[in-house]
Image (cartoon, rainbow, N blue to C red):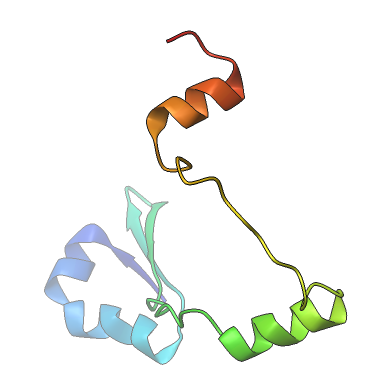
Length: 84
């Protein structure tokens, strides 16, 4: 579906066809100006899948230890070799 800006304003309900998965292009002076698409909701982290991949890669027994001052800005400066 292709609509001019004026048509998109007047027929917004039809422009919402993007919700049904249709591609809606809004034009300005006959040239594509914007495209309406449905929003993809964030699904979050799949911890079971991440654990399975870690196991496949042999990382399931990996232990990470961070120094106690890891979150201190001076730690980053020292690691990067930046002056105080």
